[in-house]
Length: 227
Image 1 (tube, rainbow, N blue to C red):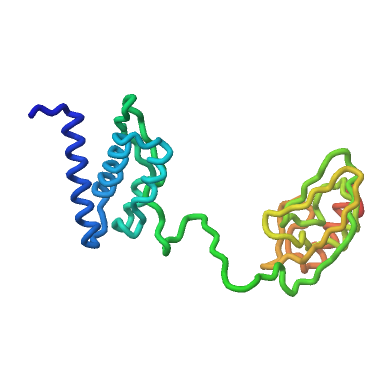
Image 2 (tube, rainbow, N blue to C red):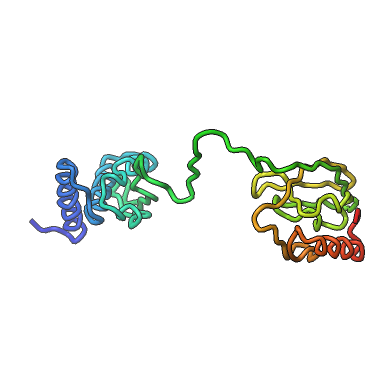
């Protein structure tokens, strides 16, 4: 029997896949070559049966989970690319993340909420005040910007906002449209309560009266409305 290189490789993949299936049946976790061989064999067999492309990819992602392979193997196989022999010809099959996470896996970037409710800025005093945009374009203020130092075209009682930021979740801001007055809620900064940067007005401890007085004087000199 004469075999082409492609046919010889196909038989090697099948043999490695059968080896992997025996390990799975015995509860042995698969190595990197065994996992690749098993998934590849199933996809190539599905192509020979003329299964639609999207169904092959979906099937491939359901064959193994991280519990079926040795530690670290899933991360070693971010994607698989192979040639499938369909009735109309050869097509490239690509599948991403072919090894699904197990039920106990921690997925990078996954948010795992704790039990119960979390109160935002719990027990911090809240200051509410009106803010009006006197400019001619929208102004966006991010959640942890020192509100005292935000855009000078925003009109409000700046002295009241020294040492405060928006009472919103991190990353959530407030948008102020031109000519529109909006009521915002502010809370004090926590941590070591030292600021630098922002508008360059307050540099130092927020609890130092000298820092506060200097910041207000500088805001007036630079034309910050409400200062």
